[in-house]
Length: 432
Image (cartoon, rainbow, N blue to C red):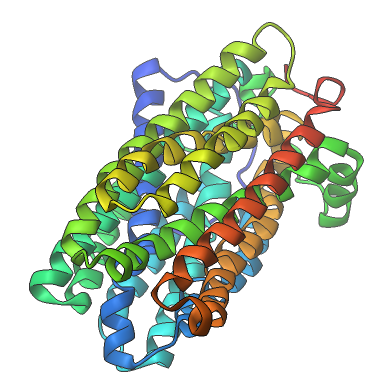
């Protein structure tokens, strides 16, 4: 599975619809494995906190900034590699890395060793999404990209579903260490299947001209992206909503365990169904709706659909944290997860629409650099710090109000940047 330095001369290649669907399903499974291994930690925070005697601030650093820093930093060189070499091979290798490091989390003997293993997970996972989304844009024409990218992203919510479900039940009966091992090791076998069955398509073929030139230098890419006014806003639109998403998904299990006395298995099952199913459905609908509305020629819909959905999700977020009955709160959360997860497919389709084939992985990685520092890095960390700061005044409700204060602010900022990006999309779309 060696990664070549160059890919040689590329030519037009025609793939059957069934094979393209197969590749899309495989990339959806990559996203699923990525998020199972990433998200399982959230449902395991309480037993880890108890065993290692950790504060919420330390838990926030474990789940957030430490992971996000290495994920973000490694995303840039790995995306450069994806733009100049085999994306298929790169994805296979990084799956092996993050799967092995997830299993090693189960062998942690303290906070530091668990932290180092999570950093390893972050380094591995940094290489998959930019390369995978770039592959999709070379398998599907521009008019179907937001839908295809949303289907790929459904794997995120399937992964969250299994992360919560498996983590909650395995922890209850076998302990948190076993949960890491069970979800980590199967990824190594999947990596081999991916490498054996997924083909590397020519770049730019879906635009009618396979690209054979070398990717532009980093400075040239940055200058090009800065020239696109819409792109300047997209990383912040994604980042602030990632703040909402990761802040919620990291701390919601602890919130329901602390505030309502639910067991890890019970809340894991509830969140698997609400986040996994509603989030996945919202992700697909957001991409499909954006493609349909933009098909008439107005590309601003690729930003308007996410912006509107984020705003509409706010009342549901408030209800989830303020309704006194836990099951009513979880039912209300379905609206929050559905509406709040419609942005990813349209966002990546927009980024690919305003860039060229040889800078797609890097343009996504740069977006993810901001997205991950704001979302994965600051989301869980800020919520944890606020919870500790509110503890003396609010007691058991400190986490509730830490979530409300931070997530509502970030939602409004995300919607603002999506609306700002929409202003120039019609002029800046390259691939129509």
